Image (cartoon, rainbow, N blue to C red):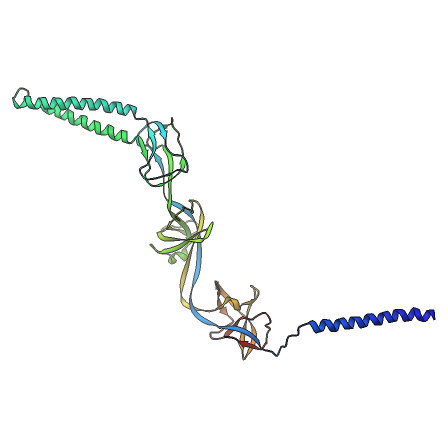
Length: 350
């Protein structure tokens, strides 16, 4: 009896487990959604068509100030005051540096006294010459001496005015190379002044792309740091000499933003679209399935979806340019691709 129980109990357990597994399998199969391959799948389609397109090209370049200069003095002398610092914004004509003019002012006083005496002598000699009390040549010499002194005074006044170094244009002091107590001389840089209200943007363009550009052409320029800001530019220079890589400089004048966000030395790019003479075969990019190496589309043929290999020549945003694999007028599926398979029955909602 015990031997029978030893065999009966395990056998009963195996039977129970088998029944339980079968029951679970039936429950699982009932929960699985079985797609009816004979049922039409709703899709959206679009027509393969030829359209006039262009090739969008971008060229990387560098922003530079349209105006930048190193300011120096016109006269030599000791610097008394420097009115600005690096980073200061200045306006055209604003005083930047003062050079010692004490000696020039003393010379001016001496010449002024000399002029005053000569003017008195000329008045007196005029009266005497009318009565023939003196020779006319003496009056002429005095008049010439007066004119010479007046020229000397004008020269000193001009030199004194140049002891003030003024800003030649509106801009920002980007470099300070002197301090009060230093010695200034003509041609020796004292400050660097930069105007970034307008900028020059320079790119290097391969020989084959030179025909895209022409003088005064309007272009869109984007700074890498602010890609959402489009700056209006105009081509101002097309280089006449290429570099070792056979690239030519193209320069555009660009107006900066109101708050001067674009700085000298920043990188950016010009985006330009080259119009093509020939029309190109295109489809919506949303119709493309498969991988980048093997792109495919579903084409509607006699109410069924047929998977077809294609070759893409270019992508332009939401449009793909087709090199081969499709013909004008064919219908490609653009939406409803989730449950789609090769040979599936489809119904267009268009």
